[in-house]
Image (cartoon, rainbow, N blue to C red):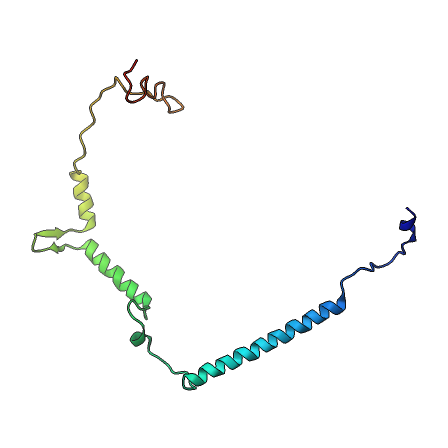
Length: 152
């Protein structure tokens, strides 16, 4: 208890060493400047190796396919117009086989008049069927003895 009374009121004596933090900041600044000069030197070296001047290249001659589009908006507009033309006009899908295409609106009308055939209904064998309850599990999930059992 007496040692608590001996402490003088005021600031904390075990603070951060400002001199060490300052040395670290100066060292960090020097390393950053040295790295910038080294990077500049490497850049100059590679520039002198390649002939000294940056030259302009045509990407369409250098890079293989697929390449970036030069005019993406007009290209997309043209693609959508071609798709609309295919969806809304009559034409041959495969003339050698006699397959034609019709407008999609007309196809929907034809399907509503004459629907596609469906599968035949499953036979109604209610002996082994389970009856669903509110929980959806039903009173009987399997016969006694499991799926291969005798049904005891």
